[in-house]
Amino acid sequence: MQAPYLPAPDADFENWFANFSGLITTSPTTYGLVVGDATAIAASYTAWNTAYLAATNPATRTSPTVAAKTAQRISSEAVIRPYATQISRNPAVTNDDKVAVGVNLPNSSRTPVPPPTTAPAISLQSAIHNLQVLAYYDTSTPTSKAKPPGAIGLELWQYIGVAPATDPSQAKLYGTLTKSPANIGTNSGDVGKLATYYGRWTTRSGPGGQNQTGPWSAPLTVAIV
Image (cartoon, rainbow, N blue to C red; front, top):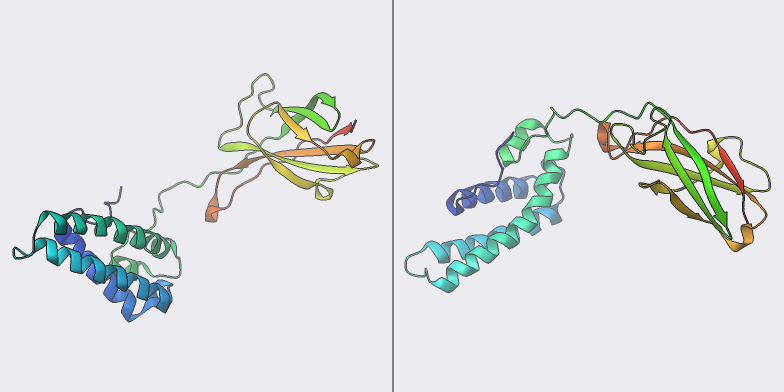
């Protein structure tokens, strides 16, 4: 596990922040930033440095200046962290530049979440006016409500028309369901039409930070009442 990039002692934080701000001010594009970002970081550093010096100089060190320094550190860290995270995760910034500016290198030891390999099954539990109650389960564990490993929910896709859909590409994403059964609403103008549903498991993230999806379920077509 990597150590926190922001040092805990104020003196070390001062040195880190001065380096961070100085390098970004000199060449913001090296770190995937723009001049406006460098200006905001430099302004926050100036405010921190002023408060830090006032709180550490024996001639000006008082309870109010110490409190002001503590408050300014909290404020400055709120400015710093999004930029540091952006730099750390930016593949266009070299590792040497990331180390030089003082941020952690991305954790390459994490294993990406693989896409689900099994399909869900969807069934109709009940239907009333413009409301259908759908249940779903994984086909590999039909007696359990457990999702497959890595899955956070079921992507439900819906097609409404006078005839059933014949392919998931005809449907639109209704939403991601996390609990079964689920209430699915339709519009009053859809009464008498057919709703076709397709579902697939989805993960929270995967390679490149993108969610991963599994194979499609068999279609479920029901009449809208």
